[in-house]
Figure (cartoon, one colour):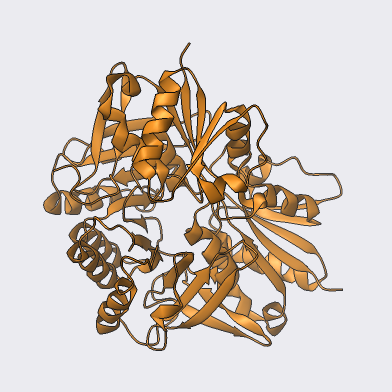
Length: 252
Length: 252
């Protein structure tokens, strides 16, 4: 008997944003592995074994899932958002070469809605044109790499989605990022801080690159920074829509 | 009585990848507006009015949806993938300022899994680190803008997801894009052509930047181009996994 690892995304928080495939994979699992708060969202059965862990221990979790599968278990590895985007899928495949038996396992990834998409949906259509996603969180990514990518993103005039903008270990990184982007992009560029979208404590802050306070961003915040084409559409009594038109130069 | 516009993503093809929210929005609609083949995927009721249109007519569809809502209808505008990513959400917000009544409408976007994520899930974890998404399709985006963004993406060493790589109007654009990327990136960079992922005619072609034949890409293909960190993990008797590790420099 051989086991199986299914790497599953729960989406950004609302049950209505989790795919049926994710629910099926969790239902079929004998073992569910993940960060505690994600597991707390799930209605698991008493016969399912739950392996909760700390958020930083991604490789530990990956190895546990692979080991359980070699023991014949059917394992669901649970991530928030999309497991393929700055999340558990990479950790599992980083670990998979450590044991020849792991390479032979049945492993599958189930995609999900990621924070950038939930934020975009609330804001209007900021990702209507070319964009990039940059994580500021990784302690093992030197600042030089982050700076190189922010510069390239500004030079390419991409819309930029910043993941993991703030952490206890790196509280200044978001400030450094804004300093760099302000030196390259217009101060009137629309910027939105989209916190915990889809959860009860959701909070949207719409501003501009020049006026933004980067300290608004915590680890639950997705920061959306416009291209030169992105603009706000004012509405009476409501927050504006944020739009990046599909055609370049359409707003001029 | 006021109407409503819900801009809904069906995901990349499999019903298991469509969110419950999308299904609920379509179920609640009096009118469903979209490109014919997307509408054909849905089990609509006889009392629901269906407005099918050509794929190129995005602004026409957007205006129709907004007009129906001002008539008090509850409208679902249907996109494949995520309506926020190179799709109908931008078209609706581009049109919304044309009539003052449209600006006052209740409009909402429901996010979905987009082609890049479905491709990533099948391939392993190519989007485990910073990435960008570039559409080659837009007839109104000059080649200079595409070239500038491809250059920036290469300079920033992003993983690159190319949407809409081929069209009848622009058959050479994907070849031009590969020529440019080959002049800047290593020929051994992993490249995957992920066609119609989640549909019966799904086809994956794994290769390298040096050896890739860009003509493999049609309009149903998502092209995934690695960063300098992206690598293949060989497996016996199976196609390799494609991985971009979470930490920069981890593979060296």
